[in-house]
Length: 72
Image (tube, rainbow, N blue to C red; front, side, top):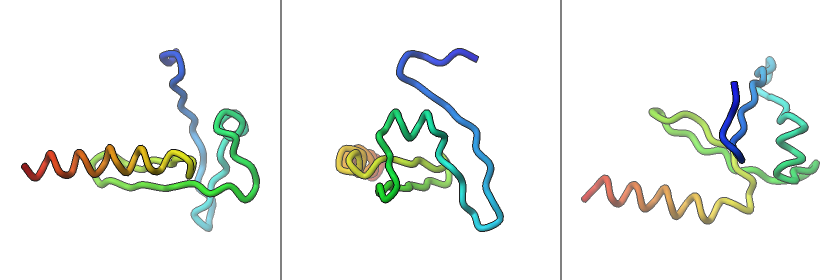
Protein backbone atom coordinates (compact mmCIF):
# COMPACT_ATOMS: atom_id res chain seq x y z
CA UNK A 1 0.00 0.00 0.00
CA UNK A 2 1.30 3.42 -0.90
CA UNK A 3 0.75 6.29 1.55
CA UNK A 4 0.43 9.99 0.71
CA UNK A 5 3.64 11.98 1.04
CA UNK A 6 4.46 12.65 4.69
CA UNK A 7 2.00 10.01 5.96
CA UNK A 8 3.21 6.80 7.59
CA UNK A 9 1.80 3.69 9.22
CA UNK A 10 3.49 0.92 11.16
CA UNK A 11 2.22 -2.26 12.77
CA UNK A 12 3.62 -3.21 16.18
CA UNK A 13 2.87 -6.02 18.62
CA UNK A 14 1.90 -5.46 22.22
CA UNK A 15 3.97 -7.48 24.69
CA UNK A 16 2.78 -9.24 27.85
CA UNK A 17 3.29 -6.08 29.92
CA UNK A 18 1.35 -3.90 27.46
CA UNK A 19 4.54 -2.47 25.99
CA UNK A 20 5.48 -2.01 22.36
CA UNK A 21 8.54 -0.81 20.47
CA UNK A 22 8.23 2.31 18.36
CA UNK A 23 9.70 1.35 14.98
CA UNK A 24 13.17 2.75 14.25
CA UNK A 25 11.94 4.65 11.20
CA UNK A 26 9.36 6.44 13.39
CA UNK A 27 11.92 7.15 16.13
CA UNK A 28 14.27 8.64 13.55
CA UNK A 29 11.51 10.63 11.83
CA UNK A 30 10.37 12.23 15.11
CA UNK A 31 13.80 12.30 16.76
CA UNK A 32 12.69 10.11 19.68
CA UNK A 33 15.62 9.19 21.88
CA UNK A 34 15.84 7.12 25.08
CA UNK A 35 14.29 9.29 27.77
CA UNK A 36 12.08 11.24 25.32
CA UNK A 37 8.57 11.93 26.55
CA UNK A 38 5.56 11.15 24.38
CA UNK A 39 1.90 12.00 24.77
CA UNK A 40 -0.64 9.17 24.44
CA UNK A 41 -4.21 10.22 23.65
CA UNK A 42 -7.21 7.91 23.59
CA UNK A 43 -10.65 8.35 22.08
CA UNK A 44 -13.22 5.56 22.18
CA UNK A 45 -14.37 6.37 18.64
CA UNK A 46 -11.05 7.38 17.05
CA UNK A 47 -8.51 5.15 18.79
CA UNK A 48 -5.09 5.92 20.23
CA UNK A 49 -2.67 8.61 19.08
CA UNK A 50 0.95 8.84 20.19
CA UNK A 51 2.61 12.21 19.81
CA UNK A 52 6.04 13.64 20.58
CA UNK A 53 5.78 15.84 23.67
CA UNK A 54 6.80 18.88 21.62
CA UNK A 55 3.58 18.58 19.58
CA UNK A 56 1.23 18.41 22.56
CA UNK A 57 0.25 22.10 22.67
CA UNK A 58 -0.96 22.21 19.06
CA UNK A 59 -2.94 18.99 19.46
CA UNK A 60 -4.51 20.00 22.78
CA UNK A 61 -5.65 23.18 21.06
CA UNK A 62 -7.20 21.24 18.16
CA UNK A 63 -8.85 18.70 20.46
CA UNK A 64 -10.31 21.31 22.80
CA UNK A 65 -11.55 23.36 19.83
CA UNK A 66 -13.38 20.26 18.54
CA UNK A 67 -14.89 19.62 21.98
CA UNK A 68 -16.11 23.22 22.17
CA UNK A 69 -17.60 23.00 18.66
CA UNK A 70 -19.40 19.74 19.55
CA UNK A 71 -21.05 21.39 22.57
CA UNK A 72 -22.37 24.38 20.58
